Image (cartoon, rainbow, N blue to C red):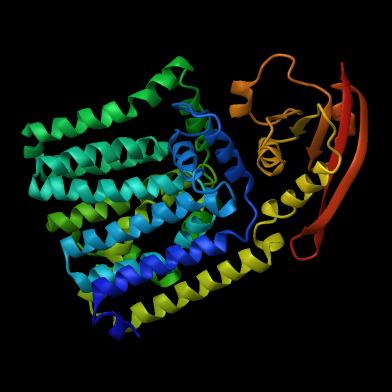
Length: 464
């Protein structure tokens, strides 16, 4: 099969990329939104240059896809666009660096692993991050090794857009700085380098200004979100996170990539390989270090596997590991197919937080009266209400939960008569806020293999 694909690498790479885009668009129409997706969609209805939880790019991109569709597949269209363009530029970069065969294998690796397929399904700030990381990697490579002003300008613009996607984009700045200091110090005397820096700052400046106006609240949240105050080491968290990499990028691909990164000195001697290796190693080492102190989400390392897919394809071709490549691809596809089937048919097991919320909101809709306000017990429940209720009314969080964008928008005396959707029995806490609290309905659904969960609908009135 691989031999047949390699007879026309460019054509087959494009076929894989387009097929996966079309398949994912159709697939995404059959899944309800994750609570975070509904939350980011809610941002797209209130555009601004910064948000408490993340930079604004995800809101901007959903705002644009809303013109196509606001259904589930429409919200997820930014995943399809981002990862499709990323795969295309992975092919272009690998072909530029090596040859068409390695470029095709890079696309095959990227398109087969479960990390990427999860990215096609659930909309997060990682989608625009992956897109603009790939574009920045491509154009900064061309700028560094070919020196064209256009490439310097585009690398600066895309670096700024990457910073507007997710704050971990700052790691790419360290990739560039390390490479320039160790390998290309003459770039520091090139006026195009400073053009790139200026363009990046111009693009990112509205987000920086928003943070300045809001006491750097978004930066503070993210620093606290993935950090520790005690610096107490938890080896089990590190090994859990490290081991998880073998799942998301597939066991064989990860093992080959990690082994040769640690073993082969060629990557330092060859400037092009060193540049690509840095884009992988800086991300991995940063999060491995953090993983000793606090639990890291597996998707945090996603940018590493952009260059990682290319580097892995290069290793397989360079060391003639044809059988290993086939075995790695078979395992990657098996994990991906199992994951895809799980999301489609066993959502209550693989992602129970997505399961049943749409139905609960539809049940709540049957109890709506004129003049009702709508509340959730958590930011994601409030976002679900806004997304799935007819007319997309404004919603709020009624009960104390973690600080979010809702708190930044909140007005005084926001509590009014209406309906509250909760994930636990909340009559006692609601009675601290309202004189009259009545459970009007509930929905019990599956959770996991054998458990169940219940969502509760309360009518509240007469604010205390």
